[in-house]
Amino acid sequence: MSAEARVRHLTARELIDAVLDAGSFSSWDSPIPIPTSASPSYQEELQRAREKSGVDESVLTGEGLIHGRRVAVIVSEFTFLAGSIGSAAAGRITAAIHRATRERLPLLAGPASGGTRMQEGTPAFLSMVDITGAVRAHRQAGLPYLVYLRHPTTGGVMASWGSLGHVTVAEPAALLGFLGPRVYEALYGRPFPTGVQTAENLFDKGLIDAVVPPEHLAGIIDRALTVLVAEPSGTPPVPSTALVRPGTADAWTSILVSRNRRRPDLRRLLAYGARDVLPLNGTGQGEKDPGLLLALARFGEQPCIVLGHQRPRQSGDSVMGPASLREARRGMKLAEELGLPLLTVIDTAGADLSKEAEEGGLAGEIARSLHDLIGLASPSVSVLLGQGAGGGALALLPADSTIAAEHAWLSPLPPEGASAIVHRTVDRAAEMAESQGVKVAALVGRGVVDHVVDERPDAAEEGRAFCERMAVAIEYELARVQGLPAADRLVRRAGKYRAGTGQDG
Image 1 (spheres, helix red, strand yellow):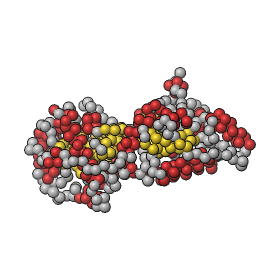
Image 2 (image 1 turned 60 degrees about the horizontal axis):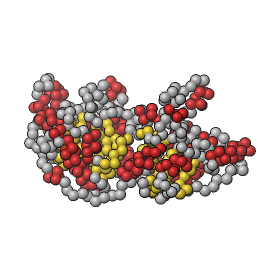
Image 3 (image 1 turned 45 degrees about the vertical axis):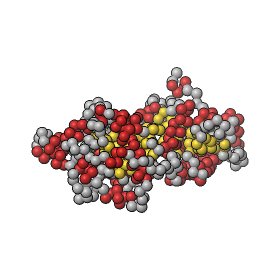
Image 4 (image 1 turned 180 degrees about the vertical axis):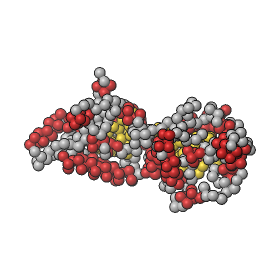
């Protein structure tokens, strides 16, 4: 028996009851009459669908509470003509989306549908455009749109409102795809390849953020909304690190310290210093790269979108490639659309140097990442956590404020590479590092770094304490940059990197 066959899939009302707080659902639906203009056979199908499903159309809409927070919901009823979308269902969906937008409610969609209702043909097909337009308006209003893909979701529904979530999770073993397998087999005379159109495969390919059983969905939605609709909070107290001056260690010492494999990385920073962390997965366009981590999180009371380098756990593991930066740009778009600050974390020995990275457009992705960060509408903070080599580091640097760990550094190449270019040997790497101004003291002198977090004496020796100190600095800077005047934000941000500004130190 297949995994899918063992799963009992919930009806629309059962899902609503499982996700919303008990007794909190209030329907937004008005009764839909069976159209007298429809053919007698279609009228009979509609009547039978009502009797079988117990509902009057293939979607239910309304509002309720999730952990006490008001949320709008749109949920498909698959037992009503396979959850297909005709004109009446489309009208119900768009009306609910527009109402959620007017009332500034986050929206949870739970599609389970074969797609367009074939009995209504092209007019029903065109309604997907109208639904997509309503979702676009909701997102442009800065409101969260969350999607729970259920078994099965295919066709026009998957190709419209099913694929537009800020955060998208799916039911285990759900069949998800554009072309339904029965249609494929009828058209091509062979079965669709197994294992492709499954929730688990879509997660592996970076198309969805998680695979979540219905009983865990409320917790995931609550964690997402805790970040996405957090109320503004005041500026926290000035942390002790705001008074820290750069250390006196030479550049090579810092580089060696930063390469310690026990040094805290982004995973540990989130584990020890953040809360309500919800990892996201991939670009949403069929790519994911282990070189980058994307998440929703809060540092103290400050919500943000987090994106940063994931240090390889072992030598030879994947480093940041072009898909990492496409995933990063997904995070940038989320921050802008939802009005959240962006936190970038830099800790890389260098981007992927391979045939695949070149053919994947790594250089162009670095350029586009810089372009997007310099012009980002949201407030931003970057953190130099450890190593900062090459274009892969620069791609996440531009921000309104930059925090640096005491032994972090930033260089166009690892010092050994710079030494090889200039001196034809790697033996003068330490000399090159000092002369190039890679250490934190030099970056502070140039005005690139605004806040230094000390290491006592080495973050690898005090992992949790260092991460907690860094987290307090991040909370403070996130709050501070949100208080800066938005009107000249882009000018000030770009000015930090102008040649000839500041002084070397």
